[in-house]
Image (cartoon, rainbow, N blue to C red):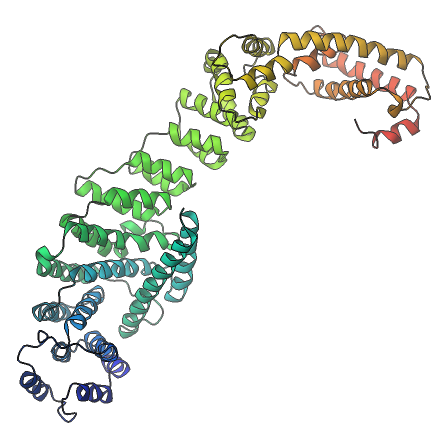
Length: 578
């Protein structure tokens, strides 16, 4: 495999061509002769101000990459002597990148010795090297998930990156530019992983590292940090920490459950821990971002790092982010492992948005009575009827009774113009007693409290107040009398369309309310209730509670209708616009 990699990345012809460009004889290919000629041509290798052309720098970088990958440390050190300062910085990055593929103690000695020589010869861009290798280390750990091949990784990465950018606010042009840069950088990392994997005999998957190999890799990174010393600032460590966390948010959907506690995550845990020790101060920021994107395994890792380093992370705010975007798995992690307890805010926001899965999750986890009541109010105010219907049975009756007026007032105040939620509570007889439900609605309708929203007060006065009931009662008496007169005519030639519109409407209401009454409906708007009060079996006939009596009445009622109505009449019902 060493010979295959060597043949792939640097041939003798390329080496001769490169040496000619630097004025070195192509026949001097032996290591000792090469060193002597370099020593003769450069008194201070790497520090003589030589500036290579772009093409020369690319060629030298490729040769150096091949030498490092094949562990030919002698050749790699010889190539360092040809490098200008910028190429030395590139060589530092290449060498540091290779540490995440170390497997033996000999390789550790070789790469750390090479890094020391590169720094001694003038490499100075420690910031770029730290950011780049942190990003790569994260990609390596992510790709070691058994569910992801290298071929799949590119597709997954591009898709997740696109989704993430779509979820972010900001200028579309800037988002497109940022996306292109991140994708290019990630594709570079995956190509690097693919190359090293082929050199190690794994053609389509990153091999799993043993605990010993991981310790070698982390030891090499620690050596780099020691060599960098004060050249790396707290800001550098912070940016490197962010660079290491970013790929894990992209790949989170492909991780095996429990990945964070497995061997594949050990290297990235050690890397992040060293960055925190170096001065990274953005653990909480990355923690919140991971929660927002549902990167459960990264959330788990950051919780562990925060605990080991006695750092504070805002688990309650993170729970709010996760619940807002419906990341149920992350929510479970935050509650079970992070001890998040602030359910009220996330529950209310989920109820306002009508996010049923999140609301159900909170209720099943266990919420206090007042939290459930406030969530019901939030769902009612935003007319999320389905959520309100789910929450209503979970709120204890004594809480509803004590806070009924406040619930309706608060729902009306934040309704935004739609009172469908308020209407739902009243229709549902949310107090379990029609008299109590009507009394609460009438109390608010007659209230002089300026805190009551005008829209709510007007709505209740028109539909749910005692005054509305009295108006409906008067209308009902008149319309019922007219209806009875028509029924007494028997086989009348009058068709539905010949009746006055108000009477047609009342006819339909009688039929509909009768059908609903037979199904034990709870409450109706007071106007409709009043208009049906005097009819046998109507809403006001409180003594007419026997189901048998109601069934008998409706059988008689339908018989009268059939007697009164010809086949032509009923054939026209479907075409009549009520």
